[in-house]
Image 1: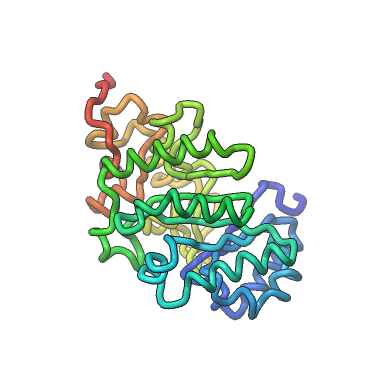
Image 2: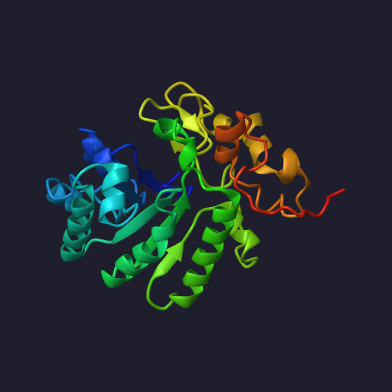
Amino acid sequence: MGKNDFNIKVTLTGGEPLLRADVFEIASSLSENNVPISLTTNGMLVQKNIDKIINSGIMQIQVSIDGMRSVHNYLRGSNTFDSAIHALRLLKKEHLLPSVMTTVNGYNFKQVPEIIALVRGMNIPLLGIQRFVPTGRGADLKNLALTPENCGDLMEYIMSKKEELKDEICIVTPDPLRILVDRREAAGCPIGNNILALTPSGDMLPCCKLPTSLGNIISQNFHEAWNSKLMDTLRGGHNLKGKCGHCEHREICRGCRGAAYAAYGDYLAEDPQCWLRQLTQVL
């Protein structure tokens, strides 16, 4: 078997991955095995580590921008906005491939147009937009989750700007609900198809937003975890409950399983932020 025969891609994320002492050792090892690497950061440690980043084989650096200055600083801490902007400018100067990730919640929802304008004005080629799911360190912030109506408005806006600005900037969202707006988006939730999360301790999760362990990679075979009953259950829409279980789009969309788990403690429950009210019964 050759290096990376399974066409694996790895994103180093967190928390803040640049706080980890061996992050560049991990990146170099992946790069030596022809595994494409991206890294998601708040930007605060980019300047300190720029030489290591350049030499590590990391192909893309994704910097989090969660609002304009005052909103971003409120959500992430004092002076974090300026650090993020400085990191993006430095990455561009060093001819690396910077991108921006925005996590949308009830507090920064109305600033999405300004964020798009900011990223566009900085000539950043890629902007990812995702909705906030109250899991992990955000589990106690359920009040920040988008309402179904806001989620619908967000998906409509993302897909319209994606088309409008396609010659200037690539706007993407991993949200499965996007297919309810644009049916040309062929895939919904990627769980069980092309994604798996690995915690710092080695626990395998179906998704970083779904904290249900598939076992530990140190002691359990990866293929056993990937082909486990839990993953098979998550792959299809026929097991879903509530509105998702009766939706005509269930086999393609499947909703966000992490959002369902965060809201109801059941990863097969309906997506609490789906705005569809009139559903076609699937018999």
